[in-house]
Image 1 (tube, rainbow, N blue to C red):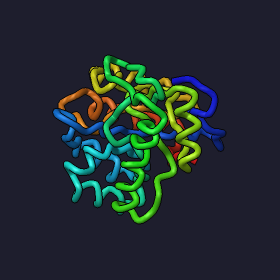
Image 2 (image 1 turned 90 degrees about the vertical axis):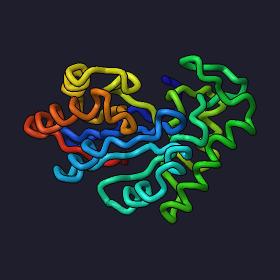
Image 3 (image 1 turned 60 degrees about the vertical axis):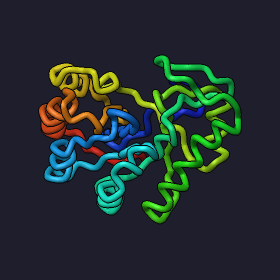
Image 4 (image 1 turned 30 degrees about the horizontal axis):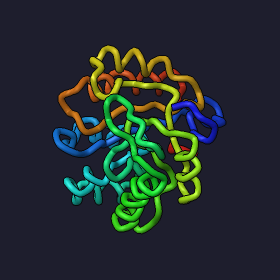
Length: 211
């Protein structure tokens, strides 16, 4: 998660901060936290949404609506949500891609799906589990995308309570990037975000897309 070339922050103007949400897709992970998305829209809070190909394929109409909303930028969260590796190394018991070609396929399959969805190529890629190896980081860049990690883990893979999410978000620093999830509406993510984001705004933070 911490290698040269992985973007985990940015040079902020003032108290700028980037919030990102992953939609991981696959069995049990194709739902949508509509309350969270409605809140972001109502408060006009921009976010980068990293969508996995399986999630897009399970929610094509909703994915298209999100892609057409200027508040949201669609990022690439991979084709099968594998850690990006050239030797199969696993993360969180999820087997990584097993070769350079498999790493290319993990990026490129969803790259093409997002082009079909949005009409343009995604700028950013976050691998499943946010784990890369150094060769995989180079592969992402060679394919024209920027590998993205995070500086603030807001919801621990959608396992955190709402209070934990709230407390984590309130540690935000200017130029940071938060990681949370938008595919588990029963998790604490949404409530924690609804509780913390207005406080951050009141404290002078401005939410921005990844630059």
